Image (tube, rainbow, N blue to C red; front, side):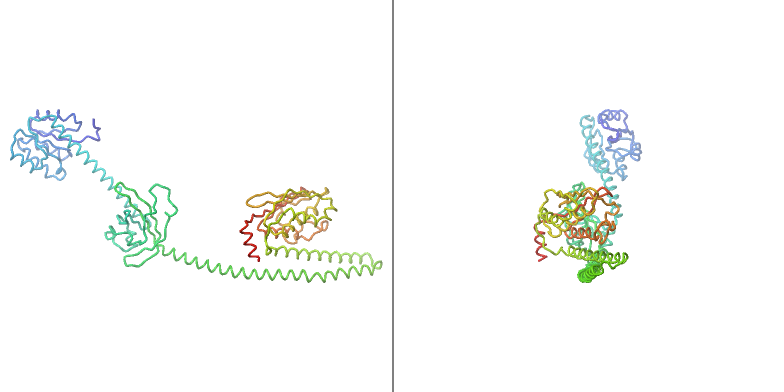
Length: 519
């Protein structure tokens, strides 16, 4: 049984009440809404207020007969297409011709066979349902199209809807304004007249994961007057029940291209300035290094002279100087020695800073450590220090820099020892694409707030109770940076210090390239 929403209306018209009831009884099994009229006038009145799937109309009726009633029904636009089935007891060609002229779709002759009546009316019921469904779909499609057009018009860019072959089906007003075509002229045109390089072959189906190439693409747009402009194009598939369409958003990129060109010129100018400035700084740095090297070298002689003459005077005047003069002479000698040490350390720092120009080779870190220990052997013997180390790797590096690193860090551990004999442990482990080296001691330690300060040139935390120039850790920092790594310390005052430096791994190709550049 059809639901109320599926039911259609049928109009039964006959001046004989018994005939009406008989028709009603025959058609009730169809489950539709049956409306009865006993005259043509009643039928016309009902047609004003209702739409019928079919009208069963008796031919012979008083006042208005069936043909006159049918003619008046057909005169109204709303009911012009309503199927009319005439009911008659007379077979007459004249009646048939007249009935069909009035728009009849069929004649049913009395006495009516119920099964035939039901089957014929059922056809018109189904036809009415189909028509109503199509009308509903058409109205829904029209509403969706109006909504889609509104969205299309609200888009900030020119929007063009095409078939897969590129024929334009729809465009918004911004597309008209951008290309200079009227809307009517644009519909049916190939989009390639607007965007010559347009294609949809690379698009993925709607709802699929977008490929990287589906982002905005820069193309050339051509206006109605044949002028061209850079355009950013974004395409996406649009599936509809009728066909697969392509939505193309088009944005005039003229201002963006100009901005990109300005940025490109600014970048070129910036690169030029950076190159010039880098060259100037390099020249200045080289000059400064040459001056520092020359100064450290040339000052050695007058310092040695001061030291020699002060020592000669001390020996010559031995026993004739008073206590005050003796202290002053000793101060001169101490400061001369101090200056001599500082100049030597400065030359060493400059040497390490320039060692990056040397060839990289595969260095056995064990051998480098042993060389550093041999250099410090007298200090080790004097302090009773114990040097412990694990098996160290062989790595691409610059040997002299590694020796300098081990020598300065171990020397620091010996120099800044506590009351206990120094114990210094050296280890290495692979980490972060390179090697992490550690040099740990049990000395007096460092306050964490000075963990960056101590790597500066001439930076010292202790007075005369500990000898030194304040350049040792600066040399370590320069050496590690020359090797492309970084160095840091973890320590607390009175708890020893742990120095770590991370050296990145260099491949054989990079090692060979470095050697070729150095050569």
